[in-house]
Image 1 (spheres, one colour):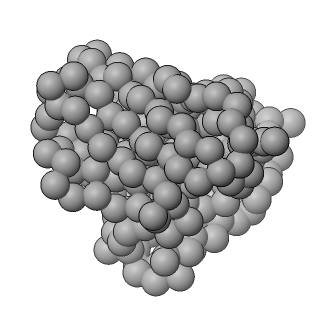
Image 2 (image 1 turned 180 degrees about the horizontal axis):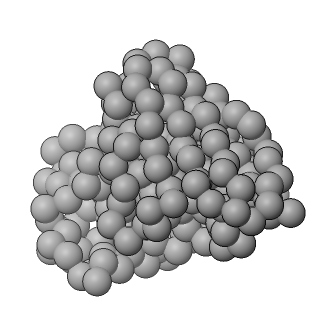
Length: 107
Length: 116
């Protein structure tokens, strides 16, 4: 199975800050990597797919990059509504797997 | 718009069985693969199973192989997850999700609690 390790597990930042979350895969994913946002009590929401493609309707302050085994989710200017847990997911090999999550708190 | 509504979650004893359903609307159900993803209380997301658009292909995570069965009825626009030999570690919110290569549409989830 492909293991995904996210860092950090928790981050606290101020509104307007630039935030970066990293996802490292134990083997290559052919860029079949997605990022999701999940708020408490809600289903996950797809933000980014194919490592860097912004899902329709997602604000442009979110961006994804990376290739091979290292991927990044960036929020260019953190907003209060971005307080959530973020997960990466690989869709290259079954079983699909998720990272352990990164909780983002707004100071 | 796409709607996915899960049902069937309950409190069950270890070793018992349960069937979850996911009613789909707002898209051509028979054209898309469907997934189950679960989330234990306070934990991260855990992919469970996939069924192809026509039901001919199925994939499972190792921890549920031989115990869980994913199926679908395209005439009823409904996805199922039959869960046998339930364990405490199966306690989770179970989400169904529509596949477009990725998972852009999710249901609201249904809670399964396995406890004696």
